[in-house]
Length: 187
Image (cartoon, rainbow, N blue to C red; front, side, top):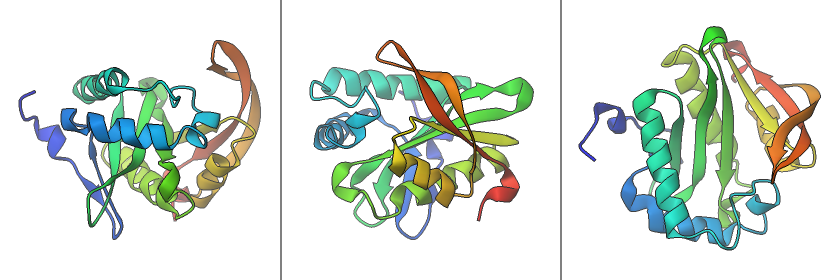
Protein backbone atom coordinates (compact mmCIF):
# COMPACT_ATOMS: atom_id res chain seq x y z
CA UNK A 1 0.00 0.00 0.00
CA UNK A 2 1.35 3.42 -0.87
CA UNK A 3 1.74 5.92 1.94
CA UNK A 4 -1.53 7.73 2.51
CA UNK A 5 -1.57 10.96 4.60
CA UNK A 6 -4.35 9.54 6.78
CA UNK A 7 -1.98 6.77 7.89
CA UNK A 8 0.22 9.39 9.51
CA UNK A 9 -2.53 9.96 12.09
CA UNK A 10 -1.37 9.09 15.56
CA UNK A 11 -3.27 9.66 18.79
CA UNK A 12 -1.12 9.64 21.92
CA UNK A 13 -1.17 10.19 25.64
CA UNK A 14 1.45 9.50 28.32
CA UNK A 15 0.97 5.69 28.06
CA UNK A 16 -0.51 4.96 24.65
CA UNK A 17 0.10 5.41 20.96
CA UNK A 18 -2.82 4.71 18.61
CA UNK A 19 -2.29 4.45 14.88
CA UNK A 20 -4.08 2.82 11.93
CA UNK A 21 -3.46 -0.91 11.52
CA UNK A 22 -0.67 -1.74 9.08
CA UNK A 23 0.08 -4.96 7.22
CA UNK A 24 3.11 -5.77 9.39
CA UNK A 25 0.84 -5.85 12.49
CA UNK A 26 -0.66 -9.22 11.49
CA UNK A 27 1.69 -11.44 13.51
CA UNK A 28 1.41 -9.30 16.64
CA UNK A 29 -2.37 -9.25 16.25
CA UNK A 30 -2.51 -13.05 16.11
CA UNK A 31 -0.38 -13.25 19.27
CA UNK A 32 -2.61 -10.76 21.12
CA UNK A 33 -5.80 -12.56 20.07
CA UNK A 34 -4.44 -15.98 21.03
CA UNK A 35 -3.46 -14.64 24.45
CA UNK A 36 -6.95 -13.18 24.95
CA UNK A 37 -9.33 -16.00 23.97
CA UNK A 38 -10.36 -16.67 27.60
CA UNK A 39 -11.22 -13.03 28.34
CA UNK A 40 -11.98 -11.07 25.14
CA UNK A 41 -13.39 -14.19 23.47
CA UNK A 42 -16.17 -14.40 26.07
CA UNK A 43 -17.88 -11.41 24.43
CA UNK A 44 -16.37 -10.99 20.99
CA UNK A 45 -16.79 -14.09 18.80
CA UNK A 46 -13.99 -13.14 16.39
CA UNK A 47 -11.53 -13.74 19.26
CA UNK A 48 -11.23 -17.54 19.18
CA UNK A 49 -8.56 -20.24 19.39
CA UNK A 50 -8.52 -20.74 15.61
CA UNK A 51 -7.74 -17.08 14.85
CA UNK A 52 -4.72 -17.02 12.58
CA UNK A 53 -2.70 -14.98 10.16
CA UNK A 54 -5.34 -15.12 7.39
CA UNK A 55 -7.98 -13.60 9.70
CA UNK A 56 -5.53 -10.98 10.95
CA UNK A 57 -4.54 -9.98 7.40
CA UNK A 58 -8.21 -9.83 6.35
CA UNK A 59 -9.02 -7.63 9.36
CA UNK A 60 -6.14 -5.28 8.60
CA UNK A 61 -7.23 -5.01 4.94
CA UNK A 62 -10.80 -4.28 6.11
CA UNK A 63 -9.47 -1.57 8.42
CA UNK A 64 -7.36 0.01 5.69
CA UNK A 65 -10.35 0.03 3.33
CA UNK A 66 -12.42 1.64 6.09
CA UNK A 67 -9.96 4.52 6.37
CA UNK A 68 -10.09 5.05 2.60
CA UNK A 69 -13.89 5.10 2.45
CA UNK A 70 -14.42 6.93 5.75
CA UNK A 71 -16.68 4.18 7.10
CA UNK A 72 -14.44 2.63 9.71
CA UNK A 73 -11.58 4.14 11.72
CA UNK A 74 -9.74 1.35 13.54
CA UNK A 75 -6.55 1.91 15.52
CA UNK A 76 -3.93 -0.47 16.81
CA UNK A 77 -3.37 0.28 20.50
CA UNK A 78 0.33 0.29 21.38
CA UNK A 79 2.39 0.89 24.47
CA UNK A 80 3.66 4.47 24.34
CA UNK A 81 7.20 3.49 25.28
CA UNK A 82 7.99 0.11 23.79
CA UNK A 83 5.38 0.05 21.06
CA UNK A 84 4.10 -3.44 21.92
CA UNK A 85 0.59 -4.23 20.70
CA UNK A 86 -1.94 -3.86 23.53
CA UNK A 87 -5.25 -4.26 21.65
CA UNK A 88 -7.52 -2.33 19.35
CA UNK A 89 -9.98 0.55 19.42
CA UNK A 90 -12.05 2.23 16.76
CA UNK A 91 -15.15 3.90 15.42
CA UNK A 92 -17.50 2.04 13.09
CA UNK A 93 -21.17 1.77 12.08
CA UNK A 94 -21.28 5.41 11.00
CA UNK A 95 -24.66 6.99 10.51
CA UNK A 96 -23.84 10.15 8.53
CA UNK A 97 -27.34 11.65 8.61
CA UNK A 98 -27.23 11.89 12.41
CA UNK A 99 -23.41 12.12 12.71
CA UNK A 100 -23.27 9.10 15.02
CA UNK A 101 -20.90 6.14 15.28
CA UNK A 102 -20.18 3.12 17.46
CA UNK A 103 -17.04 2.92 19.61
CA UNK A 104 -15.42 -0.46 20.22
CA UNK A 105 -12.33 -1.49 22.16
CA UNK A 106 -10.45 -4.52 23.43
CA UNK A 107 -7.24 -5.02 25.40
CA UNK A 108 -5.04 -8.12 25.32
CA UNK A 109 -5.43 -10.28 28.40
CA UNK A 110 -2.01 -9.61 29.91
CA UNK A 111 -2.62 -5.83 29.97
CA UNK A 112 -6.23 -5.71 31.16
CA UNK A 113 -7.31 -3.86 34.31
CA UNK A 114 -4.82 -1.03 33.82
CA UNK A 115 -7.19 1.62 32.45
CA UNK A 116 -5.86 1.24 28.91
CA UNK A 117 -9.26 0.72 27.26
CA UNK A 118 -10.63 3.88 28.86
CA UNK A 119 -7.58 5.94 27.90
CA UNK A 120 -7.69 4.68 24.30
CA UNK A 121 -11.46 5.12 24.05
CA UNK A 122 -11.18 8.74 25.22
CA UNK A 123 -8.54 9.49 22.59
CA UNK A 124 -10.65 7.96 19.82
CA UNK A 125 -13.84 9.64 21.03
CA UNK A 126 -12.10 13.02 20.92
CA UNK A 127 -10.88 12.19 17.41
CA UNK A 128 -14.47 11.36 16.42
CA UNK A 129 -15.95 14.54 17.84
CA UNK A 130 -13.19 16.97 16.85
CA UNK A 131 -11.91 15.56 13.55
CA UNK A 132 -14.90 13.64 12.15
CA UNK A 133 -17.64 16.00 13.33
CA UNK A 134 -19.63 13.37 15.24
CA UNK A 135 -22.26 14.58 17.69
CA UNK A 136 -22.94 11.22 19.37
CA UNK A 137 -20.95 8.05 19.96
CA UNK A 138 -22.47 4.83 21.23
CA UNK A 139 -20.91 1.96 23.13
CA UNK A 140 -22.92 -1.26 22.79
CA UNK A 141 -22.02 -4.28 24.91
CA UNK A 142 -23.55 -7.56 25.96
CA UNK A 143 -25.24 -7.10 29.35
CA UNK A 144 -22.80 -9.44 31.14
CA UNK A 145 -19.71 -7.72 29.68
CA UNK A 146 -19.03 -5.79 32.88
CA UNK A 147 -15.48 -4.72 31.90
CA UNK A 148 -16.70 -3.02 28.71
CA UNK A 149 -19.65 -1.47 30.49
CA UNK A 150 -17.39 -0.11 33.24
CA UNK A 151 -15.07 1.35 30.60
CA UNK A 152 -18.02 3.12 28.95
CA UNK A 153 -18.86 4.76 32.28
CA UNK A 154 -15.22 5.72 32.92
CA UNK A 155 -15.06 7.68 29.67
CA UNK A 156 -18.21 9.60 30.58
CA UNK A 157 -20.79 7.68 28.52
CA UNK A 158 -24.23 7.36 30.08
CA UNK A 159 -26.18 4.15 30.32
CA UNK A 160 -29.37 4.54 28.28
CA UNK A 161 -31.03 1.14 27.96
CA UNK A 162 -30.92 -2.57 27.51
CA UNK A 163 -31.97 -2.74 23.87
CA UNK A 164 -33.73 -5.93 22.84
CA UNK A 165 -32.06 -7.91 20.06
CA UNK A 166 -29.55 -5.08 19.49
CA UNK A 167 -26.70 -7.42 18.47
CA UNK A 168 -26.33 -10.58 16.44
CA UNK A 169 -23.77 -12.86 18.12
CA UNK A 170 -22.92 -16.16 16.43
CA UNK A 171 -26.08 -15.78 14.36
CA UNK A 172 -28.29 -15.34 17.44
CA UNK A 173 -30.07 -12.10 18.40
CA UNK A 174 -28.88 -10.79 21.75
CA UNK A 175 -29.95 -7.93 23.97
CA UNK A 176 -27.30 -5.28 24.60
CA UNK A 177 -26.52 -2.44 26.97
CA UNK A 178 -26.41 0.88 25.10
CA UNK A 179 -24.37 3.84 26.34
CA UNK A 180 -24.44 7.30 24.77
CA UNK A 181 -21.47 9.66 24.72
CA UNK A 182 -21.70 13.34 23.75
CA UNK A 183 -18.78 15.76 23.38
CA UNK A 184 -19.69 17.42 26.69
CA UNK A 185 -19.56 14.05 28.50
CA UNK A 186 -15.82 13.50 28.00
CA UNK A 187 -13.76 14.18 31.13
